Image (tube, rainbow, N blue to C red; front, side, top):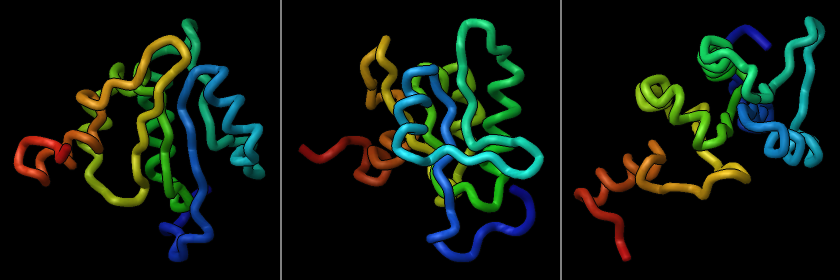
Length: 125
């Protein structure tokens, strides 16, 4: 999973950082991948996961040339908000998704914040 950014959209993968249920659900759809070195395109975060491990996975995933979308539970994104907010590239796109424990809060989503700025500070009704 290294080298130059994939040059065609059909070569891009979805990466995910989330709780066990969220990751398992997406893996059931077939997005899971493992390379020859055993690296996966997902990280399951639980109460034992170190903050540094989440940061490292985020940085690693968005730097992969085949990463088109990084899905991350919003609660986990809150823990590394400073990293999420500094990511300003279109690809990979960072999508925050709700977890089973907490509802989605659009006010915290970095993509929604950019849309809000685009519309002059308010979202259209």
